[in-house]
Amino acid sequence: MKLPKINLPSLSKEQKTELLKTSLILAAVCVSAALVLSGLFALLSAKIDRNATADMLAVMPRIFPADKYEPVEFEFEEASGVTSIYGAVTDGELLGYCVSAVSKDYDGEIELAVAVDKENKVMAVEILSISGAAGIGVKVDDEKFLGQFAGKGGKITAVKGAVRNDSDITVISGATASSNAACDAVNHAVAAVSQLEAEKAKEGAAS
Amino acid sequence: MKKVVAFLKKSVVFENSALVLMLGLCPLLAVSKSMTDGILFGVCAVFVLVSSGVIISLITKLIPDKIKTAVCMVTAAFFVAVAELLLHAFLPDVFDSLGIYLPLLTVSGIAFKNAETAEKALVGTAALTGLATGTGYFALLVVMSFIRELFGNGTLFGMRIFSEDYAALVLLSPAGALLLFGFILALFKKLISYLKEKEEN
Image 1 (tube, rainbow over the protein chains, first blue to last red):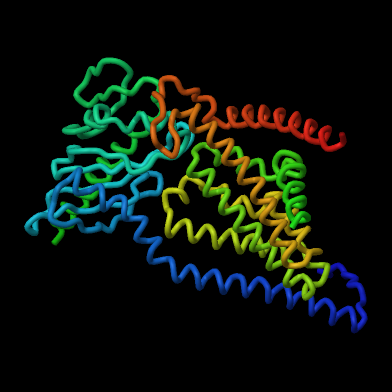
Image 2: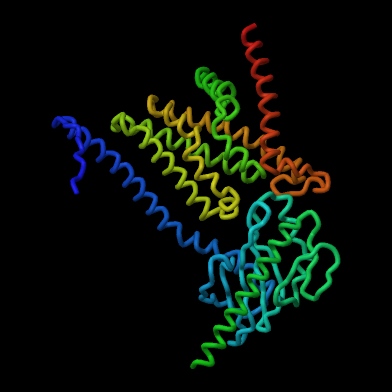
């Protein structure tokens, strides 16, 4: 196959130098900006990392009192919404897990910290962050609503009005989407813990 | 001094980048939900405009015409990234709620217009232009976020002023922001024509 011939404009020597100079200046500007930024990032990245876990570390003692919290390595699908898992340990014994999970809200995201015991029952739930229209999402940050999750396990459903099953919770009227989002996040957390426990049991049986 | 005041008056009021030139509206409508976000975004905008203006006017002689626009963009992006990193490290909550709108400042018309002015100006003038443009934007952000947070949520800086039962939730939505902006614009036009008439007489 014959390649089509491309007619490059013929450049005089001055034009070539000019072009080279221009490109070099642009490259120099970009590289120096990038260098300064990466230096700044190196300075600040430790602080940024600490911020990311600070919320969770502050919330955990309230929802799951324990001596210490050990980060658990996990591999879940992105879609599961689980962002971090900590094992709650007292006197060297693993009592349960604290899971942070996000879920899509009406026009933003809602992030929860969920304490789950080893029987896969929810102990307590607390809000980590709410993005989206302030007035709607924050209604979920209500003790009465979040208290409903305590003691529940399996798949929890958010219903309007009176609850029918053990696994039901009542949504907050006027904030149905946010209530559902919170419920989803809790379900993600419970599912993650049961998956974690199942994997552990498998490993235990194998060894 | 008189010149400086006249210059500030002109660029803060009569050539207000958002209200007259309609630049930078997207972040303006999005981040003015709360006073804290609005004020901090305004501070970031002032920081970016002043520092990129100064840098551009300093290096403009070294830059060939062909790549001036590109260099301006890199400079603006650079300072936005600096502001972003600082916010992420020291005010993570604000960083989260500003979200995508801070990086959007890079490509907003405000930064471009500012860079274009800075290209042809001396360092002092460039800094002053950045400051004036930024201040005009900042003032509008404060007004909008004050009205939106107070009447839309019943709070100011997160402190409750009146019960949320009486708050007009629509003000917190993007549509509410656009409506409010329209009313402010109408009032502003009235004010401008009044001021101009006064000056002529």
